[in-house]
Amino acid sequence: MTTPRLVEVTVDNVEDACELKVAKHQRDYVAPVACSLAEAYVQYDIAWPRLIYAGKKLVGFVMAAFDPDNPTDYYRSYLWRLNIAAKHQKKGYGRFAVEEVLAEARRRGAESVTVSWMPGKHSPGPFYERLGFQPTGEMDDEEIVARIRL
Image 1 (tube, rainbow, N blue to C red):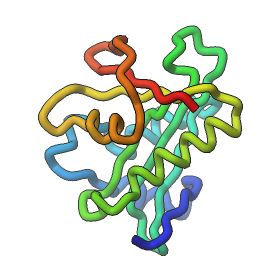
Image 2: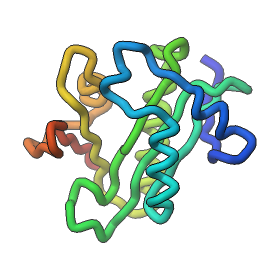
Image 3: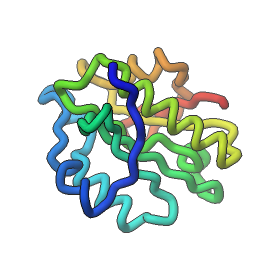
Image 4: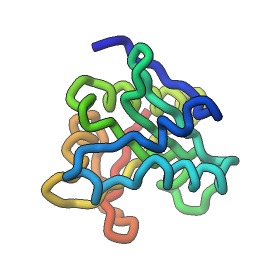
């Protein structure tokens, strides 16, 4: 694995970001990057979108939300999106991105980070649980909410 790094979304890389595609069977479980960037644009004060590069290759996208005053506890420090390009999965880039979100949450003084997922055959739930997220018993609409303590 080429050492990955996070990069801010800029005018120079946004088009490539919007073309990033997850595996076909995952498309029902995660919104496209373009949708995520639109959500980040209208919630710029809480959104933390980053592109994941390995060398010069764009391999993924991650977005967190940091909103310490949110009345809903699990939205205060939240792993909002994770999209790893289909041909770059199973190489550690998703784990790297989650670890970077956790590090940013620690820098901001968060005590935990949450994530949610739709249950189903190709759900990312097992991936997040392997990283240490534990379901809280809460649901966000039809999604399972999980938390990791920092």
